[in-house]
Length: 322
Image (cartoon, rainbow, N blue to C red; front, side, top):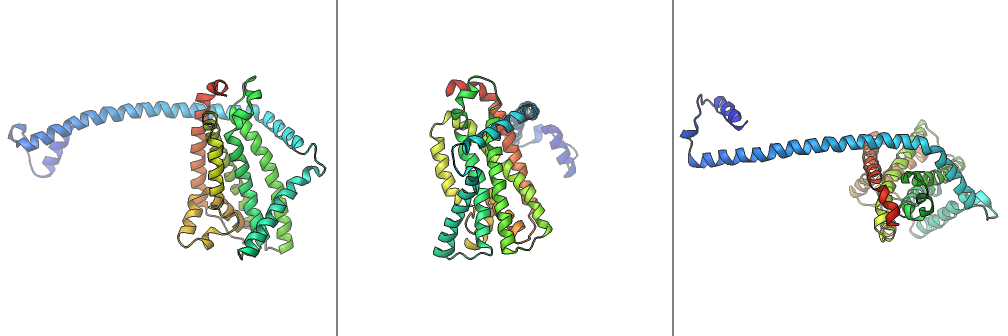
């Protein structure tokens, strides 16, 4: 390959004949080193290519298995989610009203702190905060629960086989139901504020789908490492508290953080982008950035596939560890 490349390059430059015996010593050394380099690089490249093909084949098998398991255990996940919802309000007097009271009270508290104390001025401010709290709470609950999900479900996974991510999926169904109730409150607020409704509200559906995918992808990865790292729940709790202020839950990052850093943070933080997009389509009638939504969807799908593959390869050791 080196000889052929040298002859072609020399011919292009006007040298009709090339002879190794007529080369200088320095050129011979360079020629030799380049040949040795290619002799090492090409086999290594082919080896890595072959290995990566096996890796991608394994990922393909894991994805097919994931789809089959999700179909197989979907009903179980729904039943488990219903049981969790019933258990949650079984011994309370206000029953399911707590799913409305809790976020509504938190919204009033933050509306007072940021609206009165810090003089934050946003149009439709209470609805503005409530949307941020609704999206952030969904992500927070799923992420926090995923870290200790396997350990807290020891009684189940030690007796029967169950794809571990089904437990997280069921938990996300519970939190998703609560999120939909909160968005019902948002609709009431929009009616009270007389918000002008546009066709852009339909963009809320892809936003929520992307939110579910992002949360599921991160949760699956944290679920795996939470089995082996006992301190991970404490670390994640600290990181989530820091991240809350970088998502614009109570204010607009693009307006509060000096340009262009506020917009950059919104773009590189998927939750901040989804919160801002949900506010734009519901309250301000703006369209979303499809390019950024597609980018985060692709990234989340890749992380989810890698996380699922990681769980499939290590789930047999989970029971031994816990």
